[in-house]
Image (cartoon, rainbow, N blue to C red; front, top):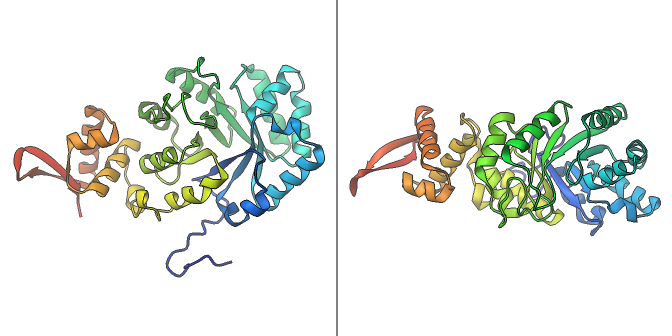
Length: 325
């Protein structure tokens, strides 16, 4: 079915999405058939959060999961459900039952408890044998018991050893005070840079429940970044950001993708493309990057021919940076 004004732009982005995946957090608060059918092509996974399946009848759950499956969306459990089953030594029964009821993605998390490596490996192997996708989630839910950056990196390394389809970085449903977010919901870019520098973005998914977080991650990391815990009401807005048909990301992606050297140079390039000729101090204020990272990013962009450096004719002591058109 052709989309509106498809003769101007083809915004269909058909599945399967090898990058730029979107995972929605399903709270069982709106029928996906009526609410998500028109945008299901932009949803890769629907995670039925927390332990919600415990309070539903099997008949209701079957209909709900089948609706998602019929829309071409894989359904995942919330990690808390599996963690609870592990505390009861019922993880194998839980996994098998999830599969029988149409769940095609298994999420293994340690948001509340610690899971021995052998148990994680056993569950991962069972999920694979059933043809399920595997998501490993890293991070703690308790705001008072957060991992350090080094501990987070080590947890991701361990998760990667199981060859998951995706490693999810915890963000919860509010995006505050956990992992890459501070208590007010602002992104800790040093954490993001460290994660992306070591692991890339192909198999990393950042939970980003707030639209401003989604926008900032796309601006800095590109439209291929995988984002999770997106509300159904935000999916359409998120997709316009991915496709550069919204003011924040308008027209920046095609060139941005060719920039090498990590996320910081791409972020600086976006700022220069959005604001025109600009000095280093203002770039630092707009991006939140420190002086050394900003200088290295500018040098990278100049070396690759994306920007140029000139003197400010109103103050010859000051250097300006603009696109090398």
